[in-house]
Picture 1 (cartoon, helix red, strand yellow):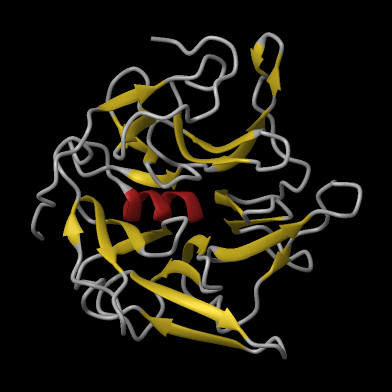
Picture 2: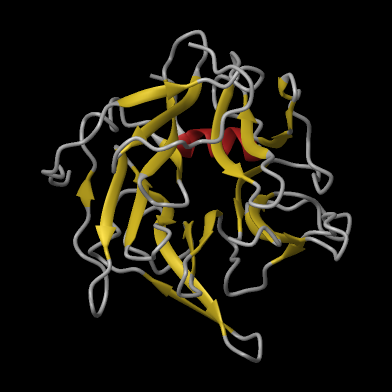
Length: 291
């Protein structure tokens, strides 16, 4: 197996219980024009335009770049960097529900000084719908460590992963929220969610009641309780086949999950689709999807 997430970060920058419910089959999702011998991961659909954003990497999952493809009469266009692309590595795009803003992580230079770690950034649209200049979120959201996978929950909390001090392991799941004065509060999700190992990516469900977590070993889930989060459970074998499952995205209904897996074959990393709550017409089709 390829050295996975943690070792890939170094190169780029220089058991819990199984869920008992019955799962639908997981199928590859290989859009013509998107799927390639490179590693495609971390999908995001623009709510305003339908454009498809994703992360393209080497087959070894290094050199991350965000690319965007437009749906045309002949299918998905050739993926290109978005207008807000910077230097360094960039990954983990995520839209706000109205499409007015996009969160991502980057090592782009700040004031001509290249960053030494991954931070969370946000880019907003102007009144004409064009992307503006990205802004790095302030401390304590960003830290001297690495931040991962910023995902906004319906209750206003911004969930993310980080290897900052004060956690339970190498990387933990955290969340942050700002008040009316713009002051940020950051808190760790606690021992029910985090482990002594590495917990990288938190994905809130569209209704905020559930959290999908990418961690050592693949994809897990936890549910919101009155006071906190339930002890996490590992998703079934249909989803977790080799522990490299990453970059999950819920459909707007919350019934389907699109994620990436390292297949270790000619296509390296590619997308897989899980219709957990019954088949629905998602992701949006554009032209012919390769078999």
